[in-house]
Structure formats: C-alpha cells, structure tokens
Image: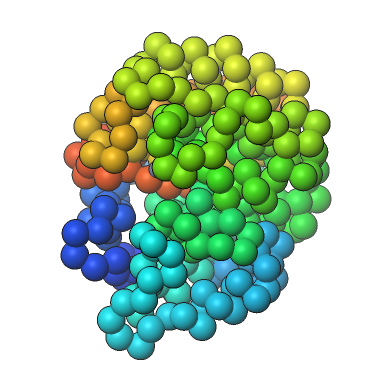
Length: 309
Ligand SMILES: [Zn+2]
C-alpha cells in the first residue's frame, strides 16, 4: 500500500508579500525535500479545487463568498491582522482544501494507505466564519466533514502538533461528539486558546499545552500518555494530522525545542493508532513551519514515517 502526495503549483501563487513568514518558499522547500530518491515510491497527484458544497460543511456560506469575493485583481488585501490575499490566493485556498478531500478519497477507496497534502495557505486557525493566522479555509476540517458526508464515516480524529493551537479546528469540532480534536502547542503563544479546560462536548477536545522550551521528552510524553490513550478510547475510523513543523527548535516563531525525529515519533505513533482502529488510514496536511531548512527536514521525516507506517 502506498503513500500519496498531493500538491498543486497554484499553492505557490498565494503571495503574502515581502517579509511575511508564510511564504511560497516554504512549499518549495518541502517539495524539494520530497524530490529525494527516498521518496520515489510516493504516488504523486495534483490537488483538485474544493467545491462550495465541501467548504460549506465547515464554513458559513457568507464567509466563503466573502473570501472568494475578496480576491484582488492585483496587489494585496488583508482579511485579518496577519492574513493576506493576492490574486492567486483564491485558487490556492481552494486547492489546499481540495487536496485534503482528495486525500480522504484516496485512503477511503483503498488507492493509498495514507496521504500527505503539501499545500498552503494553512488552515487550522480558520474558524467557520473568520480568517485568522495565515489561514483562509480550514483544510483539515473540510476533509473530516468530507469523510463523513461522502464516505459514510462517523468518527474522525484530528491530531494537531503545530506549535500553535488550532482554534479554528477546535471551533469546528467542539460541539460534535463524533469528531475528536487533540492538540499539542506552546502556551503562552498565539492565538491564546487551547487551555486544558477547553474540552468540548463529551471530552472530544484534548488540549495539551506545553511551556516554552518544553523539548522532546515533554512532547513525546504528551503524545504517548495523553493523546494516544484518548484516541484509543475514541476509536477513530480515520486519523487526520494537522502537520505543522513550527515546534522545531530552529523555528523563528516559537520555542518548543523539538527536532525532526520528534515529528517522526508522533507520526509513527499516530500510524499505529490508525492501524488499530482505522485500517491504517491517515491523512496529513501541512500547517506551519517557518525555518525553511527545519521545515524541509521535518516534512521529509514525517512523510518517511508515513511511508513506513
Ligand atoms: Zn503554527
């Protein structure tokens, strides 16, 4: 069984302007790392456009209209204090969400065991009705709802090891006990949510905040002792990963102090959960990661673990 890699050149055309950390060179660095001989067996596919039907399973229709209507003919527009749109941003956002839906299709039809979506803009800060933190549409939440609506799945889990809390995914999941969201993140840090006492309905939200400088042992402990047992209790039919790599010790936006080996460790643990409950089905999508060298090495370690998982 294979690992599918889904991406699209349109995701490079989302231009956030000079000096913005969430820049197209991030995706170039990831794709260059995945060009290595180690990854020659990846099943490589182009991301389709997400449909409006897929987006409105998570987002308000008025919000989708607002975002797509905001795409400028030239230059940039701000849709949030740090979220920028350029002429290429509408297609990039639709491809990013579409990639996750296509990845869900690939693993549920048996075409692949697992999949990684190398896309931008990222998604986990986007709330049902609000763009935030470099994110326009919540790609992973759109994929989770696609798995339920299109493939008849009931219980879907998202595990988010980006260094920031995925407030958008939590907002999309917290009132539905058949969706599970677990996050490790640095606290205090943007966006300020993700307290341990935010537990959703029926304990379907699990936040494991970690202090600055927490390091590998604390992260691995959170995965092994907190998140894996909760996933085993939830028994997901599909495991999804918000794979942000900004918890790496070289990242300029945070200071959790992880290495690429820690991301591989978490990936392997989540593949094991998927094997126990979900026939091995894992869909992962890129979130943050802002040091290009660390991002490339971390994404490579993550995808290698998926291929071995
Ligand atoms: Zn992040």
